Structure formats: C-alpha cells, structure tokens
Amino acid sequence: MPPKPHRVLLDRVSGYADEAAAYMRRRKIARRPFARLYYANGRAADQDIDSKEGIALFAAADRLVEVAGNFRRRRT
Amino acid sequence: MRLGRGSRLDIFAEMADAATATPTDGSAAAALAFLTEMSPDLRGAAILDGDAAVLAASGDDPEAWGEAARTLLAAADAADPEPAEQVHVGSESGEVFALRHEGLVAVAVTERFALASLMLFDMRQALRDLAIARRGEGGGDA
Image 1 (cartoon, each protein chain N blue to C red):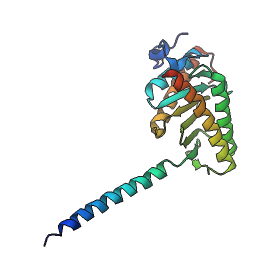
Image 2 (image 1 turned 90 degrees about the vertical axis):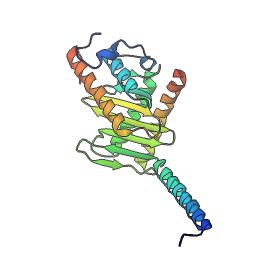
Image 3 (image 1 turned 45 degrees about the vertical axis):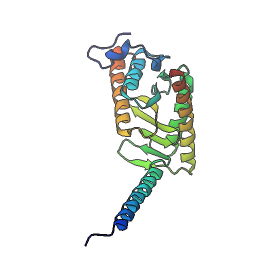
Image 4 (image 1 turned 90 degrees about the horizontal axis):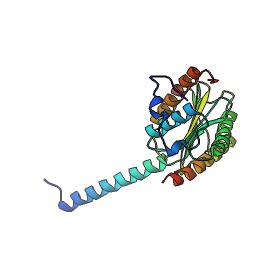
C-alpha cells in the first residue's frame, strides 16, 4: 500500500532539514580556528587556542594577515 | 642576475609582477613570483634566509613581513624544544603558512580554506629551486 501523499512530503522536508543541519555542523567545525605545527620527524602538534603558545601563534598570524591584506588592497 | 639554465625560476626571472615589487634578491624575487603564479589563493608571501632576513616580499614593506614572520617562527619554536618545520594557522581572517627548507624560510598568507597540501608543496618547490639557484651563484648560505 503506497504511503499517504502528505507523509511523502513530510519525509522530504525533514530530509532537507537534516541535510541543512549537517551542513551547518560541518561548516561550524571547518571554520573553527586552529594552529598546527609540523616537525621534521613527521610529528604534528595542534596548539590549543587558549594556551600561551596558541595565543602567540594567532597574534603573529593575525599580524601577517594584516600585512598581506594591505598588499592585496593595493593590488586590486 | 643570471639563473642557471633549466631552472624553473628562469621563467619568472624577468616577469614583471606586482607581487615582487620589493625584490631584495633576484632569485628570491623569482621564487616569489613563481609562488604567486602557482597559488591563486595567495594573498601575499615572503622569503627569508636562514638568519630570518627578508630576501623578497610582496608589496612595498618587506620589513613588516620580516618582523611578522620572525614573530610567528619564534612563537612556533617556543611551543616545543624541537624547531617547527611547518606552521599552519587558520582563522576567520585567513590562513598562514610557514615552511623551513634547506636553510630558507617561506611565509605565505592565503584565503580561508586554501588547500594546505598544495600550498606547502608549492612553497617547498619554490624554496628548493631557490636553494639550487643560490648554490649555483655561489653566494648563498643555503
């Protein structure tokens, strides 16, 4: 017996809502700031954003972005 | 300044590009032009020698690049007893890469979500070619 038409519609809408929620979750994870250091022996280390080292890395990176941002504005 | 025949940098040695507006070293400027050409997500970059002196940088303020790059490398080295070979920092405003290779340092700023592996590959290639060019000139410390 085929499902009632309104059930098909509800399933489709809830499917789209699930997809949108998953996209937002992935986007939130992808946009999270990070700082990673890689070493000669192949080791990699994530720096906590709230640690002393992480704060120093983000401050230095922000300064570089600022320097490059000025350059980009001049190019365009 | 002449570069060795067959070097990838030959192609870019004579290229007039705004990215190399402040060349302080001919072959480094060519390497920077190569990097700029290869990486569409690049906002700007700089190349430093082993003493963290700027060899070439985007724009007209190499010292600003040098100071910021030295601060980044110092912050990276403070995090671990072993010196970091690569640094990758991503934030809302963009992504920052730093790479040490053959006694040279490349620092680059890209758009958010740039492909890190490709970016680092291009930076490594630029530094490798630059190291070869400098060895050919006999004046490099790489």
